[in-house]
Each structure stands twice: as structure tokens, then as C-alpha cells.
Length: 163
Image (tube, rainbow, N blue to C red):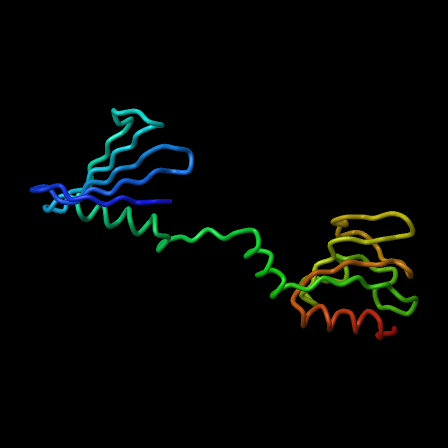
């Protein structure tokens, strides 16, 4: 992207920019602080749109455009954030586990252990987002998500606790 700057004697400065799709944006900054924004589609000589802004309005718009108020995040940033804060684990339920014969609701898994059961594999069946009334059986593999600490604690409880 290339921005051209030019002097406008007695008026101020002019900045021109060509967008990726071939349109032109011209900003004229007057000595008085007033800004004019001209939008030219393709190679048209007449602007498609003209916007006049006061100095304060231009600064406010600039703050928004520069991202001072809101910064969108890329998918990579979102994934990176999740990978730092979430853990997924597959846990095979032993016969002696406190989960056996009980439901997700009855055990209050999310409330008591800070993990969410997102899927269950039973034999060749995958149950995604199981009902709170789903009852666990020995040999089920459950997929849980939560913080690393909560997931580690839950795995230990499922694999070690006997009733």
C-alpha cells in the first residue's frame, strides 16, 4: 500500500491511498483542522462519496480505525489463547470409578470439578454434547475440557477413586 502526500498551498495537506480493490481514498486536512474524505471507485474522476469531519470527529474516527477501542483477533490468536487456557483429555472409565452408574447431572461435574463433558465414546458410538441425564458405564471414554489444573484433578479422581 502506498500513501502519497502533497501540499495544498493555503489549504493544508492532501493524502491519497489506493485500496486493495483499486479504489482511491483522498484525505484533505485543512489548516483549520477540518478534514474532508473523498472516496473514488475504480478510476472515476468524480468522488462517489465525500465526508466532512471536524478536527474532533476526525480524531475520534482515527482512534476507532487505529484499533484503540477494539482490536479484532485473528483465528490463530484465538486458538493460541484457548490452547494456553484450556485442556482437553480423554479418560477411559474404569469399573471402580465413582462415575459408574451415575449421570452428569447427578454428579454435578461442571459445578464440582470445573470440567465439562463434551463427548462420550461408548463402543463404536460417539455421543457429542451428552444429555445431563446420560449415565456413565465402565469402559466409556469421556472427553472433558477445562483448565489444565481442573482437568488433571478430574482425571486423577476418575482413575483412582473407588467407592
